[in-house]
Image 1 (tube, rainbow, N blue to C red):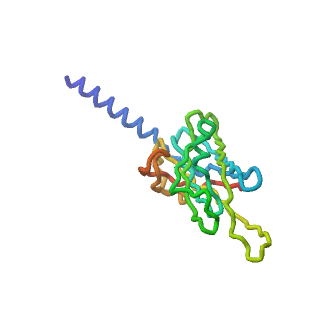
Image 2 (tube, rainbow, N blue to C red):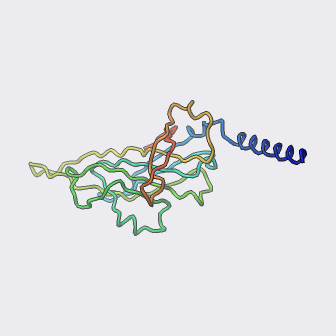
Length: 200
């Protein structure tokens, strides 16, 4: 009887130690991530291609890109829905989009972009979002004018599979609350990562 109890206790301790060793002490992979953006097409109807490159994808199971769009830009929810399986992401909007409102009457808004990682085999993912320019306020003198529109890089959030025991040593990494999925508004804790390099 005592031998059996000793064997069970020894087994439990071995399993516990193995789990602790599986935790990642080296969190540097969170800082070896690059984000690049490229604006394609011309005119009012464009495509923004965002590329995320990373290492050790096995250490996290979800990525979330939070875009804050200027008032001069909108995304068309009906167009996004019509893309169906042609896209490798899901999107959640933080507000209702008025497709007809001009830029000077429109607020900025956020989108939460959830890439599909199930079939990802490399350390890079390309995400193409169709975006549209809003009409500007007419000029008083009737002469056409041109405005510059700044599209800032998205915030990059990760859900980790393993726990980084030295996460507090990374000054550029913080924990934030954000939607868990594109299907509902419940929130989860995500790790906000400052990419090593942002290319526009």
